[in-house]
Image (tube, rainbow, N blue to C red; front, side, top):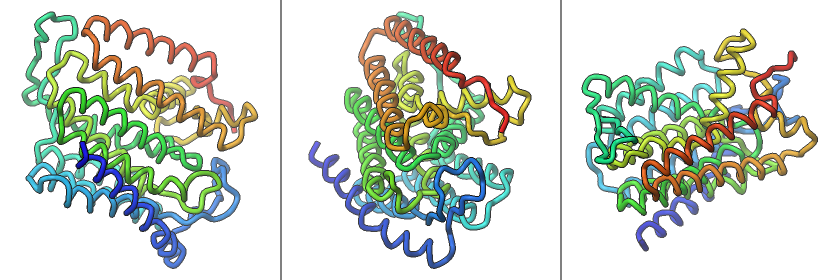
Length: 342
């Protein structure tokens, strides 16, 4: 356990130390988030490149504390592609189709390295019967990696929200992996959580720097590959449910956005101000209060994830079903499926 703690602390320190230089670099090259879009919460230009500090922290710690095998090298290569994509997007607004293509390429690099969902398990089977995906393994894994990569980016709308939620998600996956004895995943999660937390003091309201797409896409990508590794290592019937709830807040919020835009005949990829954090702020809460509530929701879903992983499959299914129904019910009465015209 000491090794994980050392890796976690190292990630925190490196991220914390590298954030101020990243901020200076962003200001020097003009990588600023200028609040021209009415969806923006902040009122003055804010430097990007916080993601660079997170990237340096994760890469350095993976290089030092994790084995330099083919899987890790492919993950690091994919992460580098994601960060380069984010840097270009933060500076020049990369076209959405090109950005998506780069995410697909990064995901394929990870898949080439062995990050792949090979089977699904029948949760109703007493013997834990699993089904080999064969050729379907590639599109299923690709869909998961690209989808989760984008979920963190979609909730990155308030100071400290994305980095805090990413840290909570990584910590949840860490505890789950530790209970299952997956040391490789525990180390990876410790590094992701540490890098996110080291950046948070500079990003929490009032923020001094944003992580930008560079950081949001990177954290999404790292959580995606880590969760897949957990599914690959486990044959438990609830293997898929665990990362879904661990990453519950960004996954549910993204799902609600897709449903909302579909029901309102709006393009799925069109941004709006009707995400959960927007709704909470419209109710009269300030940024800090809203972010803390989002942290609490994320932690509650994380607890559900850990509980599901540590219970009988049938009980886990019942709990997961109840939670999903409750989440959708409260989303409906909270207006997350409706969209007010701007």
